[in-house]
Image (cartoon, rainbow, N blue to C red; front, side):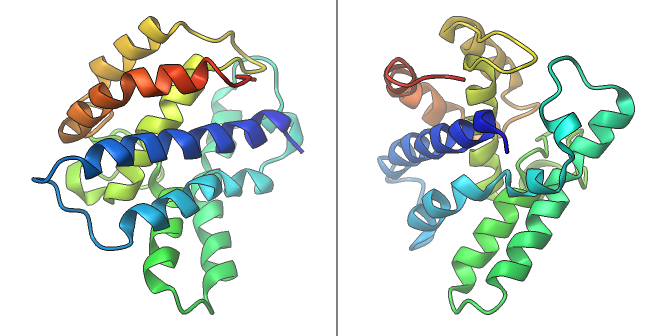
Length: 192
């Protein structure tokens, strides 16, 4: 239904993998067994709830009205519910939980001003905090129907200013370490 979203989910999945590779290099930061593989598998599903958003809103070329934005924001809860229903019979409980959390909470913000629940700090599952960085980075450096793409420098400035407000400050060093790999990747793909 939306080619832009299709390319977005592929790019953000690579972004998540690049961030996780940097996190895995840090011997002081131990991730649960299977976490990285599960998050990489779950990342493409983070926007699955957009299936439940009307095309008129999903493909709107301009800025959303307040009401339209409220409707768009429902994609997070719709996605979590859809994944819960789809994966409820799966024996892989860890994957199911990560997939639901990524869909549900990737728009939460470290300072509590995000949606849909207004979670704050470590109330936000780690997988959603990682997804948020990859998601926003892609949104900034990619062309959308409602905006042109930003330069890597502009995007980096926004991401860095968001550390401790929108994003988990503890993830900053992994983003900084991944920055060149992200730029290299985005230089090789179409960002639309």
